Image 1 (cartoon, one colour):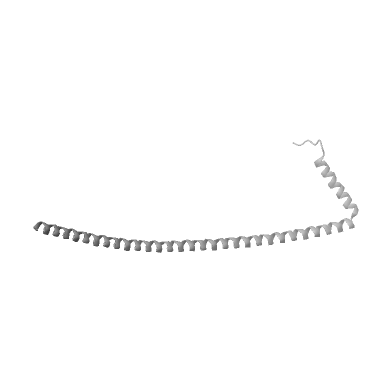
Image 2: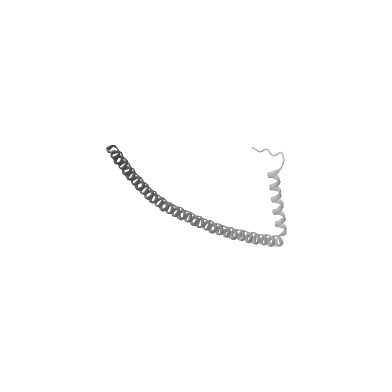
Length: 134
């Protein structure tokens, strides 16, 4: 009987140790689960922060692009307006000079004919074949 008693005591001790091991394993699993939950929450928070930072950066870049495009559009408009003004001024000056020249030729046809002949002669000298160019 003593042997049965020792066997029973050993079985009870093994059962107690097994129960303690089971409780310890359950506690370790719970601690690990809590730690994983904390890590998951931290990762989620960091993701949201990074996501917000990226979104703000993209919005800022978009605003800068809009400002740059608007500035370029303004510069283009200013340059186009200056070009139109310059073109109109040159056209008016050419028109005025043409009118003045027409008036001069009508008032002085002889002088105009002599001047045209002289200009033609000079152009002919400049572009004549066989001219020695050095």
